[in-house]
Amino acid sequence: MTKLTAEKLSLSYNSISVINNIDLHIPEGKISIIIGSNGCGKSTILRSLARLLKPTAGSIYINGKDIHRHSSKEVAKQLAILPQSPEAPEDLTVKELCYYGRHPHKGLLSRYSAEDHEIVDEALRATKMDYLGDRTLDALSGGQRQRAWIAMALAQGTELLLLDEPTTYLDLAHQIEVLELLCSLNSKHNRTIVMVLHDLNQAARYADYLISISNGQIYREGPPDEVFTEKMIEDVFGLSSIIIQNPVDQSPLCIPIGVKK
Image (cartoon, rainbow, N blue to C red):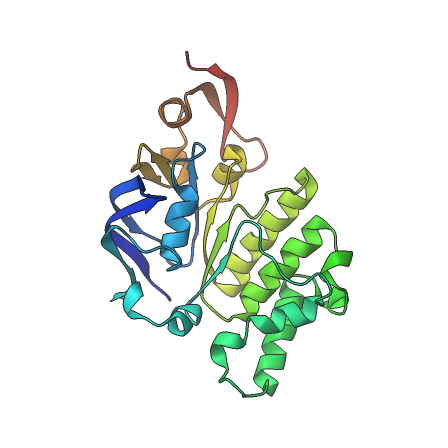
């Protein structure tokens, strides 16, 4: 399994300090979800874990080696990231998009192999996009388009998948569809998944490991039953609430009462 950790990590965005001296150890083979109020640095952490943002202090390690000592191609063979609003030519087909995921594994002029074709086909099957492989991106619904991007990330062939708010701009049905897909990829394909989510109840329901961020620090991290408390909701989000047990799966469920004065 691919190990991803950070030690004494500090991050800045537009010269403003956002994250200060945190240690982070991503559990292997689990779904980790980062939560926190707007502007707390959730996406900044994710971008740094993907080597898209260099720390102002501290280090990020992938399999024990500083991630910034790897080439971009080496990192892309070990982790895939799906940003919040990925872009591609609208006339690109779903299958063509998936083949972009194979680029880190190819030489400059090398052709796709039988293995590449099989990996792309499997990624399309895993995301239930195989019947839409010839459809262009501009002809997809929001949920289908997000599944197409996840298929591309899968085709990259990494054990580690990072996603920045993968349910943004989707209606509730498509949000659940995407989250259930990610759960399936985790359980059936043994992918380690790290994502940022805004919806607290979805985070508590789908996370194996929850990381709450406040004031540039990790407020608390661990299983949702331990992290998702009324005190955490109040301290991190300034919201009074009652936490009950979800009758469907017994995960913690937040019932908001009002904004803390």
